[in-house]
Every structure is written in structure tokens, then in C-alpha cells.
Image 1 (cartoon, rainbow, N blue to C red):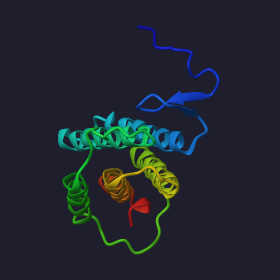
Image 2: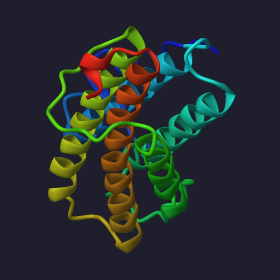
Image 3: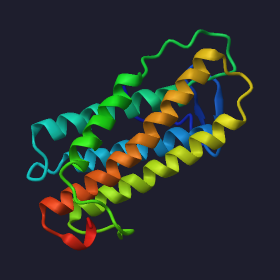
Image 4: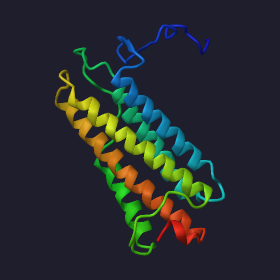
Length: 189
């Protein structure tokens, strides 16, 4: 099987369900941003010397969740087919919150705004956080115009937004935590 299909050469792509839409469509923007975020999480997970096995496992779980959320936003909502892709649940959001609380318990109280930066891994974590916030903005913008969503789609959208919001918090705290471990005080106080 060839990787190239040539079906997108004229600027369109297929949604799950088969309908073709412009690559400039807001829906493609949403799942494209989620894909970019997933790639940034992959960059972070590649730092073997910074993250232990449990940290890489957490980053892997985040990547799987981002893939699930991206699959949802890749779906053709105009068809009457039942939406049956795997999705995240509240436990995934709670796991992020637990990780945030654990790291926050080890960090000094944040007293001022901090600049994104510090050691390379922390700086790249801040880039991932910015991409995460962009994902959230695009998800909100796209969801405002939906007229074909049923109650399941609305529930998935709400969970996806909550997850992405919490993920940006997780990435902010993770960057501070990485800088604290590296003793780069300018970027975590």
C-alpha cells in the first residue's frame, strides 16, 4: 500500500465517514492542532534522561487521549451514523489533576508571572502548552457552529474541552517542575 493517495492534491481531505472537506475548514484546523500537540508530547516523551518510566507512561497516556479526541473531531457529524469511536472519560481528567497536585506539592508557591523557558525540556513543554491553548481555542470556535451534534457529540466535546484545558495546566506545572529539578530558579518561582 502506498502512503500517498493523491486525493488531497486539490486541497481537500476526507472525514471519518467519507465526506470530503477543504483542508482550510475549521474542523481540519482542530484535529490538525491536536495532531501537532500530540507530536510535541512525543518530543517530550523522547527525553529519556529527564523523565522516568512513570512519567513517560503518563505522556504516552496523554498521547493516546489526544488521538481519541482528534478522532472525534475527524468525524463527519452530518451523517446519521452512530458515533462509536473510543473516547476519554472523567478518570482521564482526574489523572491529570492528580499529577498536577503531586507536582504542585513539591513546587514553591508561584508569586509572579514566569517567562517560558529554562532548560530545553521545560522550554519545549511551554511550547506544547501554547499549542494546547491553541487547540482549546479552535475546539471552542468549531463547537460554536455545530448544528448536527447529538447529545453524545455534545458530551464528547465537553469532555474534550475539559481535558485540553486541564492538559494545559499540567504542561505549565510540568515545565516549572522540570526547571525546579534542574535548579533553574528564574523559570519556576
